[in-house]
Image (cartoon, rainbow, N blue to C red; front, side, top):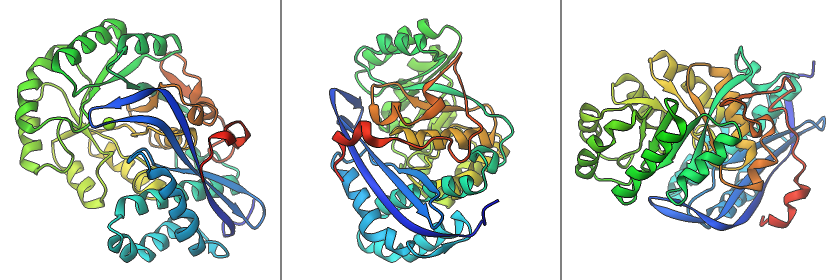
Length: 375
Ligand SMILES: [Mg+2]
């Protein structure tokens, strides 16, 4: 077995941007292209690990995150010895804490560091010749997934196509005109039958609006309602919603501190908790957090909406953690995801089986997307 201790020979981010014919719509904005920031780490022995940094918003932000990795963060690791990915995560986080504050950019720094963290975990698992989910303590390679990114336009058509490709669980974007949201929920409930259906408002409503809308959503047996109000609204508002919501509430993609997650785990507000390993915390924090979510009696569902490498790493985290949650799988056309998520591209009866190859089990051939590269 290779030594656990390795020296980082190179660390680089590559940014891609796939132009969309049909924009992806959320309640807070439209995506006219799909970006991805892939991170490649290589050690002294030529072992290569891959990661991905969250980069969806703002529309110009992906290139910035890639440059943060290449021009600010990589130099802190190249030539250094790493005995464990968690140590590198702490070194980078502590070493850039003041710079991130001074820049007013704790988010982009956290996302760039998360991308590096995923690459180092993949590399670490490959050196140990273990699939990532097993290295993190997973027992089964099988996970459940749900179809996500379902736009309000043509929602039923999108869901039917996803069902034809093996999906059995669905999450609809809501937070648009209420009549339209209700009609789409009704159509999707018809398609999924008694199966899993959830809704994501993407922080669209005020608490007053949400309190009026909640009873209208009561008849759809939603598995969860995600971010009905802004993640940072006063705590009392979330408590108020919880006491009148006919379904579990979900959030996590916009929670960005250990303290906030700790509070979410100790309180009866969120039934479903959704950290995003590419957006905050990487695997270094989120692997332990995911186990804590299960211990607290809540459901762990990894949030993910990006390219294939981060999706595959998120699948490994869910397999490592267990529980009865689902992995979020975007069903919109995106070559930056489709060719790079390995077995997650093959959904059978709502589930995915990870391979037993080392690391995330996939070495990307990026030649097919070179024309979309921007950094
Ligand atoms: Mg969401």
